[in-house]
Length: 287
Length: 278
Image (cartoon, rainbow over all chains, first blue to last red; front, side, top):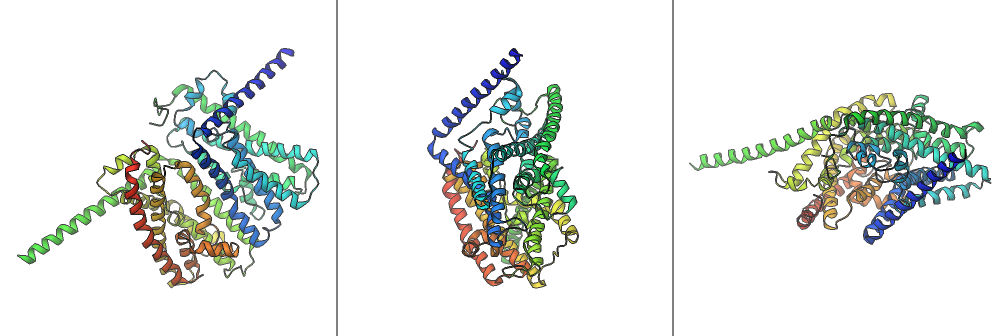
């Protein structure tokens, strides 16, 4: 038992060390060129704002959308921005768009490292400074909406918020990995498929989906789980759903999606072990 | 003799133009077929666009009553949204020039026996044909199932829409080449700038939300910018909203202003481009 605990402790310590290491690299990258750093910061900030501004202006003009008041929408937009911000902070450098790495033969760079694959995946894309500007608008919008709603929130609610944010991020990542695994068998044509999958969720995640028909809504909750990225968890967190159990739907769906993603990825990796990549060049780019 | 000489000269000139047009057509056809060869999973993006239009239509039905708002009826807004998606690529024309910078293949493009603008424009148009067949026409065909009337406000509006759409493409392509030239001149990081551009262009152009639905001053300012000539103008004409003459004149103005600017910027920036990419 003690040996097991010791092993877990050493693993956590190693993850922490690697996060610090990649944070340092991120800092070095940014301070090596101040102009470039400013461009990156502004771009992250503007992109985050740009992804929500349309719906914000529309909601402002019509004083909400359906049953969603302006404050509800601020929370929804803040939550959806936060989910993407968290992913960009922890899984940058194409870790979330895995088909690019697989399709370009760059997975080999990871496979030769003296670390388990899963540990590399959860640490190598850590870019806390590059991703910071994507988080700030999300936090501000979310806080603004919560203050406007004037709801009293206890520690349990914040714990559920963290759990749901984590679950929404897992769903987005799993969706990207499920599709991205196709790049193992079709590296050229599927190189950008994770980007397409990510774009699908990213573009639609900001919308309240209440008025959609049953079939479409069902599809957007399962096949293309847009609704689970922000709309459904926010409804549950704000108490807009009638069932108290609804708060657990997104975390459970995240577990399910993670299982499918792991299955697809490992299956693809097994195939890759027999074929390798024909697209690899010594420069590390596609051929 | 003179007549013969002039006649012969005319034939030579026509032959040269025919050959040049044939080159453009060949480039366009290669780009169109390249879609399937390079990425058989291109349908994924079309699925996303169908879902996006379905969500937007549903939001308009929630937000607007039958009378609509800001002079646009609900039916007009639904038509606006659907037509915007049908002509998405024409209302926001994108060439593969940025990609050529990234790949470093732009240098090879300069050695080809066609002007750069002509090459990239031909490729872009080629991809449009494919998209019309695989996405735009099917979307129009299923529009009755979505409860949307895709017909223009009148025959005149439909005809003027074609003129306005051509002008919109002209303004959009000019802006695209200006954007590319600025990337080179200012040595900006490509993907970062593309990200910012994508985030704002749909809002500024009125492709997603009619500019009339934006807060008063914001919508008014946006409607005078060149981006509005890319999407808002033709879409307004299609649904019979706005001052048609003013919209078309504004498009002509921006087109006449932006193309010389694009050529000038490109002329200024092309020396710098050699060190860019590769």
